[in-house]
Image (cartoon, rainbow over the protein chains, first blue to last red):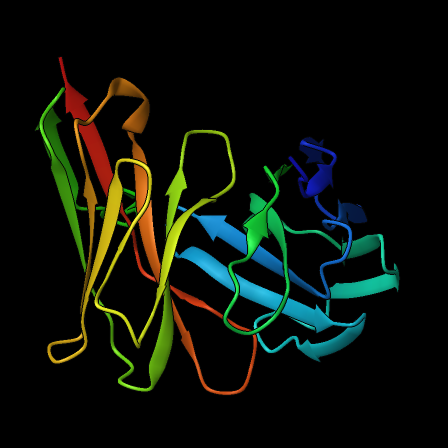
Length: 113
Length: 112
């Protein structure tokens, strides 16, 4: 089965460090989404792309977070500088657009000390 | 101070019984609905979807029912098994963009 692949699966780093999370969407999918999941807030949409173009990043703290798609096989989410409140599980999902399900990776569990 | 996490409703079901997980959605313009299953340490996994022109759809051991009049969605799991233990999310979408809106989730607990 085709899968969304996320790396790293776990990341522990100190406050102030740059964090980069990577996602390989399912081949042929034209939409890519970044979500954050915490116990307090549940699943929150941070940003999404269609055909590699960013369409909505309103859920993302723009002073420290950035999301890009350098090519169709790679999406990145960067945090610089990281803060303890960024600790969460970050999920990437890809899909075929409106009216189709999104398929999720298994996430990056991020801990900022 | 005490931390307060997101309180998930929990449904406890005897192994072998049928489970029914309910979800109320908010947007009357939503026309596409999805159920996801999330096991510990994994991402949400697509189970089944339904469009607003249908009121019932069946998969393998699962059935989704849609009642647009009262904006209610349910997931029925037949003959619940230990492997069904997870958090289940309903999600909705509509309008012109690709986003889907997730509900808060329900934890399904299987009793031996």
